[in-house]
Length: 547
Image 1: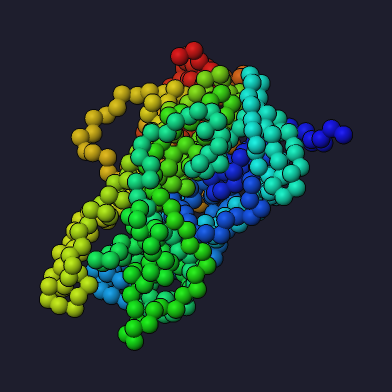
Image 2 (image 1 turned 180 degrees about the horizontal axis):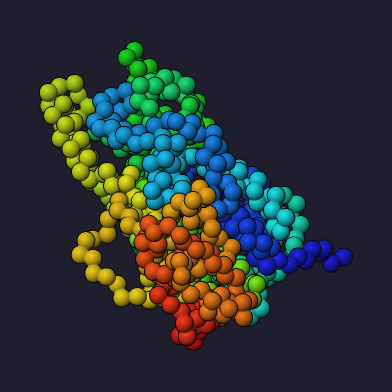
């Protein structure tokens, strides 16, 4: 008997269901686009990673109606997000960086965003994302299935799927395929897309453990992270749940991986109790991993798109990895919507790589800079000793840390300040000369085409950002002529709404009488008038012009 193979079809197929793949599925569902998501694992991986959720990512969660659920997913909202530098947990404190709690951070950001960055490990927020995808009326999450091959033609992509447990087979035909299949992406390799940069730049050992005793030890040091440095080890300790779950990352040389046990790593980082005993821990998982600083040559091949770790790999210093990937997903999603609904032009999808690759390259470089700053710290042999020489060494190292490391936790410019300057669907403007180098800690709101449209509070208590999402929005000052652009949009079936600004402060913030904001919240064009060229403005923004 011939083998039974079930056939399915869908608009978009997503391979991989980590946070980035889930974000793409959620955004497609938000836009009403049918999708099927395929993931080999039956459930989310339990090893905790991706604690830092950036402001921009929270703005996306807000648009999806999930911000409060993420904010209160289980991490204590009032726990200070302080960062400590210590010789060992039971050793000497070198320096403390005071940082507000999740709740306080949102309030502190009100001038530039309705949201604040969060500390919320993936273990807590990923189940909420999965539940959202599983409840999407226009989508499906197929867990326990793997893609065994694919091919594409002018009209779509065909996937061969196999169920991991039973060997059952399915064929899936889609119009577009998103590769969210991670660092070792089989889809990227099948496409022959190379990655440029440095692989395996450093070796690490991650240990996930439970310790109520460590919670008591740290009770007088409320915070979320400790960077540990002593003559034996460099390590990083972070809290997973603000209670008794922890993750330790021990940096090591290639030879150390074969000789050091998890207990060795914990002892060198935590230290020992006054009676000489080890801190009591229950090891839940332990695994080696290597850091990379690489970016794919291309993020697209025909109807197949690389998203997240499939397109770029970053050191986890600064929390850029997942957040950069979710930015990819949001950039891609509305463009797929435009093509599937018929109002996107033939050049629109060409903008994905030139918009997202420069962001990825900058973030990869920034994360690498943080890693190098960490590894460049020199540890005096006396650093952990209770001697005058040890005290002097600790004072000197603290000053270096304060000077060289603080930028890792001050990245609002990275989070909100990226601009799609070289995109083929962004209206170009002469760049104003700015003699200052890029500062990851500086963000200045602007409506320069390609930038994130600025946040501002409206009289009804909503943010301007709450009005961006599924459609293009024409933000305009009182008296500005919107008729040409609105009529041109109706003629081509392009979704466009007008949003009037009445407040003089907001009009000044938006810098021009007319500002065209894309569905992803980035500015496509701005000007004093579109009289006589409304059609050309919209064609450029949707990739339908001939340039």
